[in-house]
Image (cartoon, rainbow, N blue to C red):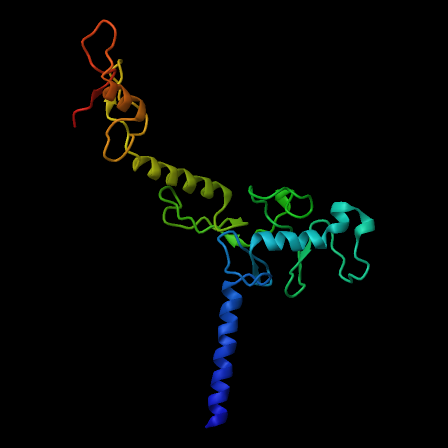
Length: 213
């Protein structure tokens, strides 16, 4: 019975290790970030440590042949890299992310980047309504649908912004943000109301009037 118990304990430990491999970067052992890269060998890495590792692999292409590692057996072409974990050669380079520099043969040119994911975006209308895009892409969504989703998020955020409820001299609603959730006017109109400024030639005590809702 003791042997069975020991076996079960070891089995659980191995399962925990596998789960850790799936959820953690295999270079730093830190949790995987949203921009992590999963290679063809199924090993996953956070972008920055993988970028640094590929730079080391491509040092001869980046800085010249005199910096090449003569002990390296597997030679890479310009648009190849190796998995840092299992050393499997990948036919492609890293995708470019705006927050990191462009490094030739490492994450640039973009057309040579690995495209291992299928875009899961579902069309809302047209011939392909309710069908996934399935276009191969570098990250979770293809570039087209990533831009579309970002625009939608911006629109949602703008809807939640409380605008100044004052009217300008032309009768249009002020387009600025309100000073706070408790103050219906923007900072400029709040100051004018507080100072009770008069418009020359009129009896109005402010340049603006509240919008009646």
